[in-house]
Amino acid sequence: MRSLAILFILFLLGGCQKPPKPLPSVKESRELVVVTHNGPATYYVNGQKEFAGFEYDLAKLFAQDLSAELGEEVRLKIVLVENVSQVIPALIQGKAHIAAANLSITRPRQHLVRFGPPYQIVQQQVVYNREKGRTPRKISDLSGANIAIPTGTSYSERLNEVAANTPALHWAEEQHVNSEELLERVADGTLDYTIADSHLVAMVQNYYPNLGAGLNFGKKDDLAWAFRKSGDEWLYQQAQKFFARIKKDGTLRILLDRYYGHSERVNPMDVTGFLIKLRTVLPKYIDLFKQAEELTGIDWRLLAAISYQESHWDPFATSPTNVRGMMMLTEETADRMGVSNRLDPTQSIMAGARYMIVLKETIPDRIPEPDRTWLALAAYNIGYAHLEDARVLAQRLKLNTDAWADVKKTLPLLTREEYFSTVQYGYARGGAPVHFVESIRTYYRILEKYAQKHVPILPGFELISATSWGASPVH
Image 1 (cartoon, rainbow, N blue to C red):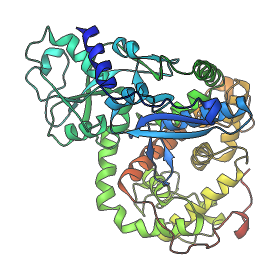
Image 2: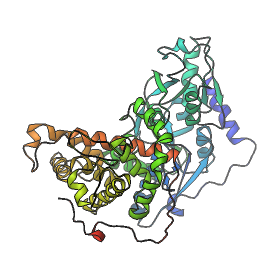
Image 3: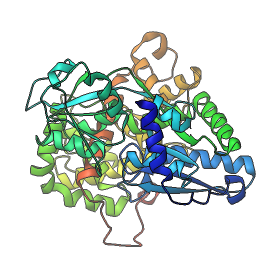
Image 4: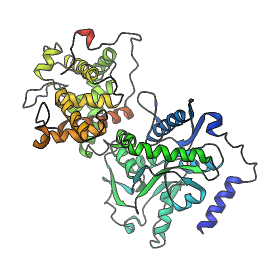
C-alpha cells in the first residue's frame, strides 16, 4: 500500500503536464533557491520587520559558505508555499534546489527525495488543553476525540501505524493550515488534540500557557534538508561539508540556542501572569517605554520585558538588597544615571535604557546581535565584572566567549570554588543572570507577537550614546 501511495503521489506530481524547466545550477546562476513555508521555526518576519526563522538563518549561512567556495556572491532566494504538504512536491517539480522546512526523515519521504545530514532531533507530542481535559497518557485516551493535523505531515504516517490497533481513533487532515494554527485551536478549546514537534510546542506554550504536552508519539525524529534525487551532486556535497563545519565549530549549537534555548525557561503560571498584566498594567506605562526607545534606539518591547522581569511593572518594587523601581536600579547605578527618585517610573525606565546602552557599548565591538544584547542583559543582572569572569572561564573550557549559548554554561560555575577561586572577581550567583536573560528573551518574544514595533516620531533624531552624556564604560 505504501509503494502504491508513493507511485500515486509521483503520478499527481507529474500529471499530464510537461515537466517544468529545471533550475540552473547554483554554480551557473549564483543563486540558491530554497523552498519552505511560513512558521516560527522556518521563516517569518520578526518584530524588527526583518526576515527570520531557524531555517532561513541556516540557509543564509549556507549561501555564505557557497559564496566563499565559488569566490563570488551566491544570492539566497526563498520560495514560499502555503504549508508543509506542498514543500516536497515543489522540490520535486524543480522549483527549488533545497527544501528547508523542518522536515522529518521518514521512509515514505526517502522514496521521493534524499536528505542531507540531520541537524536537530525532535519528539512528536500529543498536545491538549490543560483547562479542558485530562492529560493523554496512552493512545487509547485519544479514542473518539476531535483530532486534527496538517495534511502532508509525518504525523499522518505515525497515526496510520497505530490506527489498526485503535479502531476508535479518528482524525482530520486539514489543508491550508499549519501546526501553529492547530495549536491555537487547541488552546482556545475548539479542538481536542493535535500532534506537533516538541520544539514547536515549547515555543507556542510561551504564547498559550494552557497548552500541555501529553504522551510522546512514537520515537524521536531527525530533521534535515531535502534534495532532489536527480539534483546537483556538487550542491549536495557542499551541504554535507557545511553541516559538518557548523556542527564542529559550534555554529549550529548557537543557532539552535538562539531560537529554542529560552523556550522552557518560564513556567506556564509565569506566562499566564505576564499575559494578564500585558493587558491590564502595561498600557499605563507603554508610552514611557516608547519614549525611551525614541532616545536610545532600544526596542521598547525589550525594555518592557526587562522591566517586567525586574519588577512586574511595579514602580514601587523594592528588594531586600534595596534595588528599587520599575527597572530595579541600585543606588550606585541610579546616581550614575542621574536619577533623583528611583520610584519615579519615567526616571527609572529612561535610566534603565541608558544603562543598557552603557553595557552594550562596553561589550567588545566584534560581538554581533543578538548575543551582544543577551550578554549586556547578563551584565545588567550580575555586573560586568562577573560576566567577564564567566567569559574567561568559557575561554579556558574552549567554548565561544562571544556566544550567549556558551557563556550561559559558565556563569553558574561562579558558585563553585574550584572555578570562582581562579578568576579575578570571585564568587557570584551565576545561575541568576541565566534565568534573568532567558526569561526576558521569552517575554520579549511574546511582546513581539502581541505588540507592534514602535515607529519613531522623530525620524533622524540623534540617539543617545554612552559617551554623549559623559558615561564611562563599565569595568
